[in-house]
Amino acid sequence: MSEQHSFPRHARTDAGEIEIRLMTRADEAVVLDFARKLPTHDLLFLPRNISEPKVLSAWISEIERGAFTSLLAIDNGRVVGCGTLVHDPHSWSPHVGEIRMVVSLDVRGQGIGRALSLETFALALSAGLEKLSVQMTVDQQAAIALFESLGFKAEALLRDHVCDVDGKKHDIVVLGHNVAQFGAQLEAYGVPGAVQR
Image (cartoon, rainbow, N blue to C red; front, side):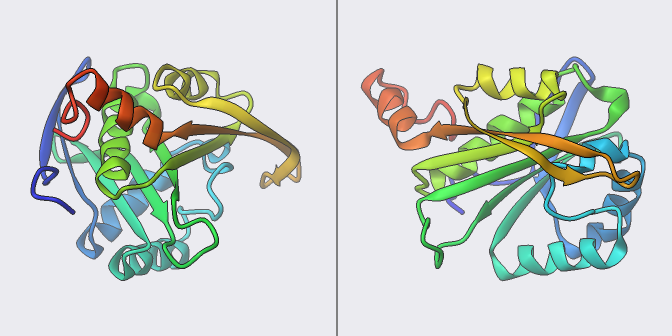
């Protein structure tokens, strides 16, 4: 991580000022509490159920290994959001990263998701990634609108791709963003540090 993009950081939102910092193993209990308060439907677009302790522990191991970078949004000492950048430099797609994001139900629509998205996006830029993807269930219209406002475009619809705890299947939409092109546009306008800050 570059010095230019260090944490913790602070962001103004409609919910007030929040702290955004890197997630570590010391956060395991508070993140588990956060995840267990999320509606189950919100967890469907994640590859695994992070409200399960063993899954959360494996996630933190991935952070420690360097495969994931996870940011927590903290409001008055409480986790209200989490944004993760997943990147595997040893895969066939070393130039691609995936953003995974969840925000507490009680603070949605107040800019916390946007603040986390921008910080996660900035991590992707500083990591030199060329493309980003994000996925969610098709009914998560606010989340889709948020990512579309950041320049993401729909690339795929995966029908009946996830199955909830009641056995009901849901479609997943995959959105993509050409990060390299966006970075070049920033430089062309003379603002290469606008997102990286």
